[in-house]
Structure formats: structure tokens, C-alpha cells
Length: 119
Image 1 (tube, rainbow, N blue to C red):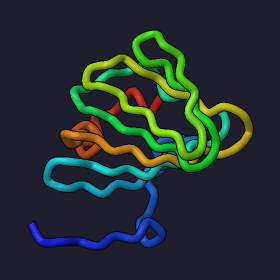
Image 2: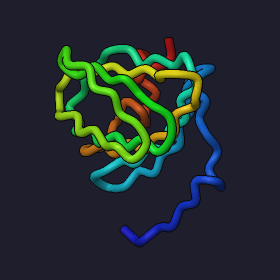
Image 3: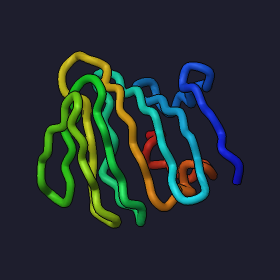
Image 4: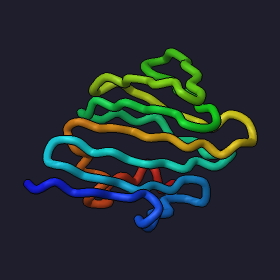
């Protein structure tokens, strides 16, 4: 697999819902996602086999991971283990910018079977 260079500004965003958009870079074993979550956005509880690292750049998110509430703000990173039930919601009136890394790759995001996000 050759090296590839990407620029977020050159990528079109996928508008998943009115309050949730994303861009993705997909490698052989990992997936990096850029997220923009507007005020009022709630990601319903779900789980997946993938380990997830969420890095908040702007705004605040409230995660509930296996029943534990964890708030994450700018410069903070949350590691969510595989198969952990989790949800997230935007806190306050500031749009959240976030990077998430998944390993292995989220196939449901590539094949469109991520219905829980689109409700």
C-alpha cells in the first residue's frame, strides 16, 4: 500500500444527520474520522468490536461508557475498549470538533449499516 496524503479541507463531509457530519481516512488496519457535532447532537448507545480513541479539539462531549459518565473537553482523549456500550452527547451551545480512531476498521461505516446513527 503506497503512502497517501490527505487534507480535511479538500474532503466533502458526509451529513449523517442534521447535527452530525463526518469525514474519513481509511487505511488497511485503522480508520481516522473527523467529526463535527452540533449542539443537540446525541449519539445513541451502541457497541462495536472496534477499539475507539476519541480526541476532542473543540467543545465538550458527555460520554456514558458501560454506565460511567465521562466528560471530555478540548485536548482531552477518551479510550473506549472493544465491545463497551457507549453513547455521547454535545454539552452546551458550542459545536464539537473531534477526531476518532478505530481499530480494526468500522465496516458498518463503510457499507452504510450504521443505522443507529441515522435516527
